[in-house]
Each structure stands twice: as structure tokens, then as C-alpha cells.
Image (cartoon, rainbow, N blue to C red; front, side, top):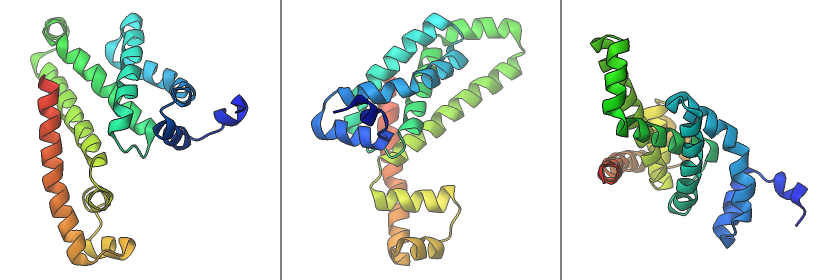
Length: 190
């Protein structure tokens, strides 16, 4: 197949083709599109160019391993979240060192605020990743109700689900989100 044509495929087309035939040539087109984005993100968090370059490689290795496990609707957002979580985990590993340096540079209250911010940001990322693992009905209803602040009636009209179904999908989605997030936290601790 002509490389020019392949380069014009959307992210979703490349992912679909990779899922269908497991040929790495599709990822060899997809991942380089985002090398600079991931590198920039890693530099933002890790500050050192060598650390950021290593992180980019580790993120891409993780992405290749994780793609078959998830239904990915928006690759760029998903990749960004994977890269950000990787950087936060790297920072967490270095936490005693960072804490020592940061404590000398800024006040304790500001340090605590920064650590809280990083932790809350990480939890939000975990929640967004968990939402992508819900079945379509639950994901749509959860996103519509909690993130877009739509009423049961609005969701029902948009999705053609009955109001009872919307309530059920939200209730079951919340329960499943909790289960998924607990599993993610256990996996992080390993």
C-alpha cells in the first residue's frame, strides 16, 4: 500500500487496522504523530531532557501493550493521559528527593498544595480512563449526566433510552466505575 495514503489515515483508522491484523506498521505511522506532544508533556513534568526522552520510549512501550486492552475513542486524549500518568508515577518514585529539594525552595503549605494538586489530577485522570472502560450505554449516560450536567429526560431524548434505562445505566455505571478504579489503584501499588 502507498505510504502517502497510509499517512492520510485518521488515528481511528490506524487503530482499527492494527486491531484487525496486529501489524505494527500501523503503529509506526500513528505513534510518531505524537512524539513531540508526549516529549513536551514529559519535559513539563520531568524537567530533564534525558528523563523525558526515556519517558517517551517507556510511554510508547506501554501504549503498544495497552492498546489491545482498551476501547479507545480518542487516541490523542488517551495517549496524553497515559503519558501524564507515567510522568506522575515517575515523580512519585522520586518523591523523597523532590520533597527535599522543593521544601528548601518553597514553603511547606505551598508544597502540600502542589502534592494535593498532583494527587487530585492523577485521580481525575484515573477516573477518565475508567470511564472509557464502561460499556457504551453506561459511559454515555455517566458522561452526559455528570460531565455535561444533563437531566435524565435530556439523556433519554438524545439516546432514545427510557428514563428507567438511563437511571439504571447511571447507577450501574457508578458501581462499575468504583470497581474499575479500585482495580487501577491496586495495580498502581504493585
